[in-house]
Amino acid sequence: MKEAKDANKDEQQDSAEQKLVLTVEHDDGNLVVSFSENELEARGDFSPATNNGQPLTLESVTNFLYKISVSYGQRWEEIEEAILRCNLNHHPVKNIVIARGDAPSSEIAEFFEMNPVLVKGGPIADESAQIDYRSYSPFVIVRKDQALAKMRKRKPGKPGKNVRGDEIPFPVIRPEGVTGGENTKTVDGLLVSEINGQLIKSGNVLNVQDFLVIKGSVGYSTGNIIFPGDVTIEGGVAAGFKIYTGGSLTIKQTLDVTDVVTKGDLSVAGGMIGRGDALVKSGGGIKTKFIENCRVAARKTITVDSDIINSSVFTLENIDMGDKGKIIGGDIYAVKGLKAAGIGKKTGKPTKIHCGVDFTVQQEKEKNNSQLHILAAKIAKLREYIADPALPEEKRAPMRELLGRLEQEQQAVSVKIAELLGRLNSDESAVVEITGEIASGTLIEICQTALYVPEPINKVRIKLDKASGRLVTEPL
Image (tube, rainbow, N blue to C red; front, top):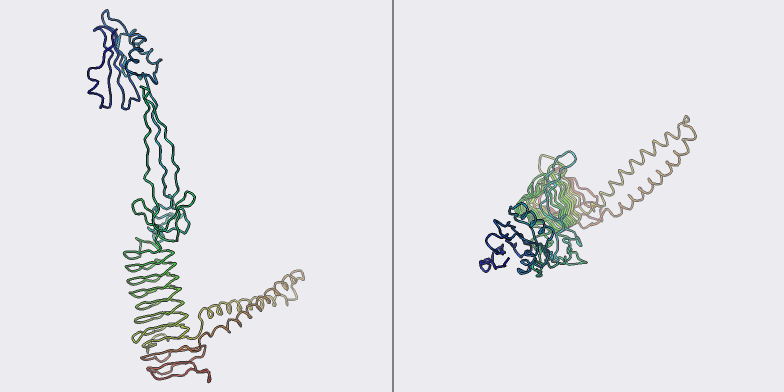
């Protein structure tokens, strides 16, 4: 048998599959070899001899494979079986794998894989399958030194070999990982946050910012807001939603108060409205248009443009309402005093003003007083039991022991209250300055010295006269 080259070989070099033909006499057995892309695999179509032609032999096939450079991964058992079937059955045997190379293994370059915990999902149902959408937040908040991503080490590649024995270079896969941006750093193969803040993913870059800006209002689209830095809300805050910030809080519309706690200053352009147990706490100062039906506490000055209505307001500094703001109903505690246009009104609940008194000490004193009343009731009950002659002696001894412990606790609480009383009055120079009217029924205290207003008075300054131990008024 003779060997010939495929006439169309040059035209097929760029195609996905090449074919080489063992050309023989017209009636002899024949073999067509096709190659896959990258010549990783060779397949053969075996044709039987016809009439008096010569059948295929292992030798002729071996020589043909040598001539066409199929030198690696030959599958001799499959080749022999195909030749035998073709010659015995006088039927073509097609698509037989006669050689197979080794595919290369890809190299995977190192990359940072984002922490899956930081990929936000939907709200989570509780055991009763109920979902509180107020507890769901679309913002990703991270802590200082929290891992944002982990370095996946490079996986080495391995070259392959085709059926002609040629090496096939391995490809390099570069996964689309993440990189560190603002306020991030790499530590021991981890990408970590340098601060407490909001995680922002810009493309593949992870940034952490120490402020949060909410473009709209706080509601079901945002959930409750819990953030370690400064927060700006460009809309309002709907009822039922809570806000906790580790920095300042700026709200550009109305705050419908449920529970708001901020370590820094609080600024509310549209005023504050509360319902029920509405609570606002600020570690700095507060500026707002009005306060209505709220419990508000601040360490620094509270500035209100218009009215404070039926609210309990506490500050360790001043309340400044200018020449227009009025206080109507409620209890006001301002250590250094207050300035307003008016206090109270003819009808409605009376207004009580307390100045010069540290409200934090006052609250602690009230807490200890409540504890003292409870202890006194327990002690009285125990003494009654112990005095009962019908009480067995074996029960009397442990009761006496308990009584002794309660009396010691009572004494300690009494000492604590006495100490608090000594710190209660913190600013004897506090002043109440009213540019308009103080309505009848108003009670004003400075350092626990009271002034009851039986009839309306206008444009006065009220302060403590330490010499006489009473409050005096001065016309403005």
